[in-house]
Image 1 (cartoon, helix red, strand yellow):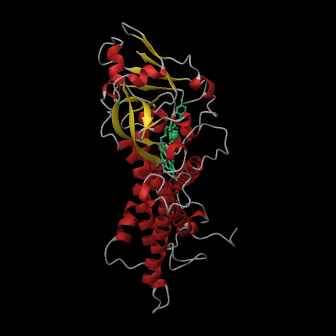
Image 2 (cartoon, helix red, strand yellow):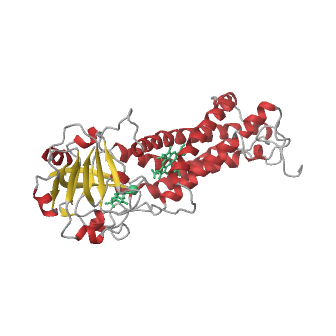
Image 3 (cartoon, helix red, strand yellow):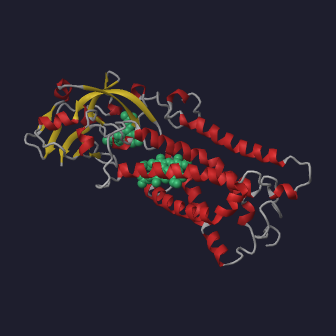
Length: 389
Ligand code: HEM
Ligand SMILES: Nc1nc2c(c(=O)[nH]1)N[C@H]1C(S)=C(S)[C@@H](COP(=O)(O)O)O[C@H]1N2
Ligand SMILES: [Mo]
């Protein structure tokens, strides 16, 4: 045991794994950076959760139209940017993981046990998030449920960790602080510079990783984004497709001449419209994004019938919640709900056209929902029925 462990009472910079880069100050700088990145991830993640698990008391407004695009793009970008920072932080504090005896006293033991959810959970969030974005599902459990509950656990452990490290980090970050590595190192070594370069390399790795992926949502950068799973200008009609018509098993039903769009539920006059009748209605234009939960997005000019016009034509009372159903026989995204304000928004459309072209089968022909400030998973394609609740 003694051959690889360290003494918990020694400063980070001393003992078996001594390095001029392993100092309280470097650990604190990396820790603050991770704290900021994880806080952005947590807030934007909760916002995404609220969209998909609506709470009656907190209905999500349809404006600003591009807000979800921004928050989910930030979520995935800050998450990916934090990968090199977390790895660097684990490397710097490595001696602490192998200290022996494991704890000085009971309080120290509690603090150390708290590292398990913090480190394990943090690694799990970054791994599961990245795998999800890369559409790789090497597990059986539900990604969102596991990612969501782990996020709460990590944030709880993070708050406890910040409390435990507040004093020592505060000291280490103060201007004029002399790192204990400097007093321990031979005079004349330029460790200050080494540490600054180390932090520079970590920040650079973070930046490069971000540039290599963020083009999936910031289209001017798409040429740099060699690691991004999606290019916002590649796909049917020059736009990416999440789930195509064949995979969703809707090809026949969408092309069937007996297709009707139905407006039913709490209405005075249920409607049943052919695809041609739908296109013959008053079409409206809206420039709106598709912002996938996976962090890619594109903005397009859509044309279609306003949902509120359809509701009025069917004689629905104003201010109703609306359920939108797809032709898709099964699947997690075959229905979605519009709250009152979302349903009443002037840009909430059953789109029939994208960028002036009739929608392709893969983008939702004969019509698909497109509404402001909404995750892609809720922009239901191949709509067959609008039910007023
Ligand atoms: C590389 C890092 C990360 C990536 C790529 C990532 C990716 C994702 C994705 C794709 C979703 C959407 C899931 C869906 O709705 O289907 C999501 C949701 C979420 N993320 Fe992350 N994430 C990362 C890190 C984090 C971190 C560090 C936290 C918290 C500190 C976090 C908290 C959340 C929460 C709370 C949700 C909402 C889950 C739900 O809707 O129930 N994520 N993340
Ligand atoms: N019926 C149905 N609609 C759906 C989906 C689906 O699987 N089934 N996928 C959703 C997801 S996850 C996204 S990101 C958007 C993508 O729209 P696009 O394929 O037109 O780009 O469609 C949404 N609409
Ligand atoms: Mo999506």
